[in-house]
Image 1 (cartoon, rainbow, N blue to C red):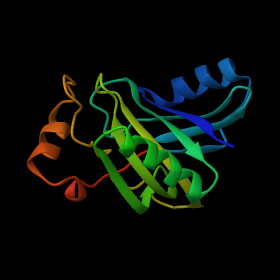
Image 2 (cartoon, rainbow, N blue to C red; image 1 turned 90 degrees about the vertical axis):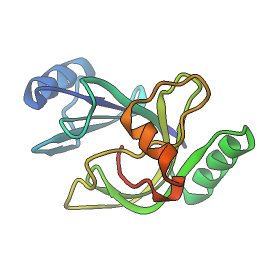
Image 3 (spheres, rainbow, N blue to C red; image 1 turned 45 degrees about the vertical axis):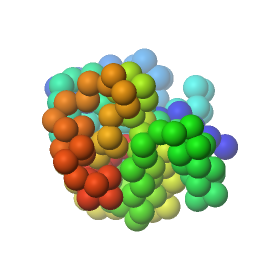
Image 4 (cartoon, rainbow, N blue to C red; image 1 turned 60 degrees about the vertical axis):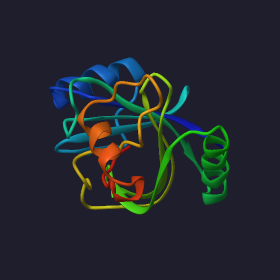
Length: 160
């Protein structure tokens, strides 16, 4: 079963943990010095906040978390079939987890990740999430510009 993922960059982690815990009526399932995550069933969402590598406070990226590698391959295949420029990462460490991922920018430049998590990690991972090449008309900032100068496979990073 798939789960929506939303990652929000926040300026004050403790204040945001209190806010979202009240909003969701639940405490986070994972809290680190720079990160917190809720795995909610109603609504079914993996909601994460952090103080790492964001260009500015607000929604950093959205995504779909899957339960199997086969589901990840299916979603990545759909994106590629639609002609989207994707960036695949295997066995990456990000957000205190080990995952396989596919990243894409939607036509408006919103970063999406599809990912399959297969283990926990003791470190957050890289500081910046990778960006596939921007879709036509998208404005994605410095990371997208860097992606244009390098092949997609060379752009490294993290995050969910």
